[in-house]
Image 1 (cartoon, rainbow, N blue to C red):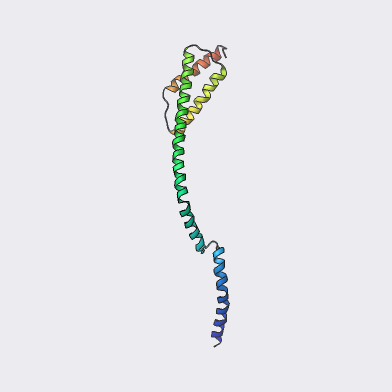
Image 2 (image 1 turned 90 degrees about the vertical axis):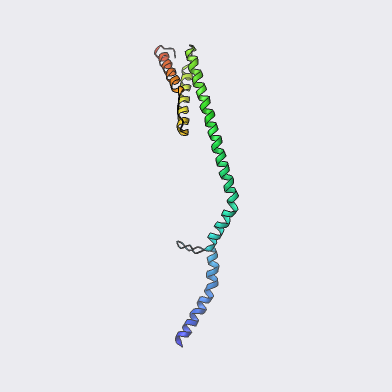
Length: 145
């Protein structure tokens, strides 16, 4: 009989604690053992609510890559034209300042960086750039700059 009374007393204590434990489980997660189902439920609801947003962000990222590629292509074309035009002007004995030569040297570095980032190769520009560097060195050697 003594054992039965002890069990009943223990049950009465535990029975009063069950609603408190249930209420706390809604608010508190035990770490590292995550036993709160609310986190899983809210995470699933969040994924469902943000599904359209995620699709929209994916579309925006794809369009951004296309625009970025076009900007790089335009910049490559612009730099190529500028280097070719400068080389042509040098071939036609047009005088240039040291700053103009320095500008061509700088944009050539930029040109190669863009090519490398996009996995592209260079063609005729290197030949023209080498010619520009020879003219630049000749101008420096002859005191024309």
